[in-house]
Image 1 (tube, helix red, strand yellow):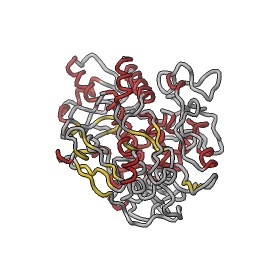
Image 2: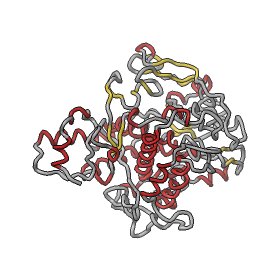
Image 3: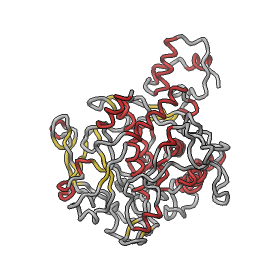
Image 4: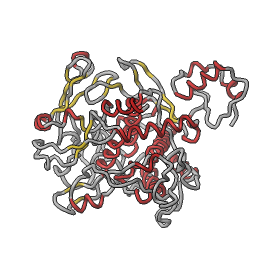
Length: 489
């Protein structure tokens, strides 16, 4: 209700980017981000064995030649420009102060292992769709208490003596993060930028970085709403003839007055974007200042036909999955017969062009809530590839990838810290699964299922638990035939 929403507006906690406690003049000058854990009042929860404040170790492996500079960009050797000491959490604990649990673990002591289920958005019930939209809007309207975003470089901050940070909503923390990881490098002065650099795209870290991004986003929605069963739905756009999630009960239909705007019948028509004007920032030689820049604009279908014809087909996705090498050659946009580059360069950009159109600058694309649904499906393709090819850890490059993409590089701008190679693993090890990848050896595959009268109330409750992802596989041992006889595609 409204009272709960206003209460959460001031108390919500989020778990990535710059912790407010680490953006004081003292913290920046000492380069230490080791906040107290409220549970015992010690830095990183050290008294309770949750973690400790340690030096942030970075890799000394060489980067590729695409970025020929050193010491000019705050993302280099993340997070050392801002902090050289951070919390390192023990066991199943995680977070900038070790207050949270690692992905896939729950409970006060982070000892409850659960697997959640990401489902096709078109298979959600009406109430589940309404809940998704309301959660998104709550995140957009709720100011983050624990996190702020940088509006200036470390040099512009006087090397920490004059902090430059801004308050944004929980949702917009993630918009800013996507802008920040993909922005051009500022070399000093108006128009003096280096475009051939991106710490989360066009190189090997594309899939791991967006996987961590989605996991944190999912985690924050749970924290904000108290709904620990929440999971991100995905949009399976294979063979789609257009934007079939662009309806007012989902991501918003077109406005009749202006087709590039969202229909006033959708709550998303009132959203304001930020960090969407990359060329303006480049011309001025500055960072996005996190101010509002107008409504979301999209124009599905009215894209450059010379750049991309349509949404990807099932055959094209299957071809991408068939490629045995994760990355090849220079491991950038030029990589040939690379799974990562085919997934990203071949069709990820095409999708963004079609659906986001006038919002399709890479840095600003996360303003549109479709972005989350799209990347959940892209992550599921990454998951299929991992399961099909079972790559050795050595397939992920340790050196000579574009800057920010080597295996031991910490993902910018995440705090807590994550290394790229740590997410070159199955989603099941991170506590989540995709409904369309299920089979009888694990959970029951219930996509497109229609109920019938042979289920009693108890069995239906069990199925609903299964759909939420919190029912152990063993609970359905020997019951697969029953479910298949009571449900059909």
